[in-house]
Length: 328
Image 1: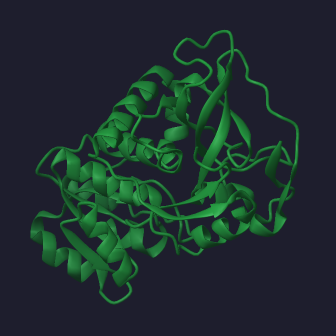
Image 2: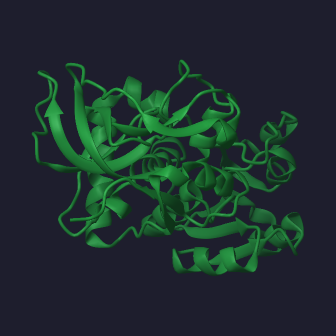
C-alpha cells in the first residue's frame, strides 16, 4: 500500500511517501480502507519524538481517519466489511489502509462524508472527555478555551456551547476570532493584540473562571492559573507553545480549585466501552448538525509534510485533511 513513513524523529523533513506492507487486524481490531485522514498537533509532536510515546521507526503517522471496513478480527461484533466508519489509533492513518481497535471505530452517519468524518475521533472525543468526564461542565458555567481555533480547541468550544456554557475563546488573530464565534464562542480574546489577563478579568470580574481548557501551556497557563474562580477546574490538555509550565500550588489552595489532567488516549485504553459510547454520541451529534467539524483545507496524502508544518506553525483553523482516495 502507499503510505507516509516517518523514518526519524525529525518532523516533516523525515517523512517519505512510499510503499509499505499492509497492516493486519488483531482479534479486537478492524481493518479500514482509508479515504481521508486528518492531521493534528499530536501527529506532528510524535514525528519529532516529543510525544509521551515513541513508535518503533519507521512508522506511519496519523491518528484519525475515515473510510470503509475491509475486514474484522474474530472478536469484533459491531462492524462488518462495507461499513462506512470514522476511526482512530495512536498512529497508522496516513496510509491507504490502517487498523483500529473496535472501541475506537464509529459508524459514519449517511450524511457525513469521509473528509469530515476523518476529523471527529481524536478532536471531539478529547473535548468530550475534558468537558464532560473530567470537568463535569454544567450549563450556565463560564469556560475559557485556549488555542480555540485549532482542532481540539474548536471541538471544546462547540461542545461547551452545546452543553449551555458561556464560552470565552482565546485565539491569536482576527481571522481565528471570526471562526470561533461561528462555532459558539460568546466572547473572544485575541492575544496578538490584547492583554489576556486584563481582558478576561473584565469579562468574568471577581467570580473568575469555572473551567479553563488549556491547549497552549507556557506563560499563558501561568496567567490563567490566576484567573480561576472558587471551585474551578483548570485542565491542561496540550502544550503547543512548546513549554510545559509549572504551577505555584498556593493558587489552587487559596481558591479551592482543581487542576485536572486530560489524557484521552489512556482513558480510551482503560475504559474502551465507555469511550465507544461517547464516540457514538458524538457521531450522532455530527450527523444531526449539532457539531460542525471545521476543515481548514484538503491536501493530497503525499503533502503530509506540508500539512504537519502548517499545524506546527498554528496556521490551521480546525483540521487539515489528507485525501487518500477520491470520494465516490
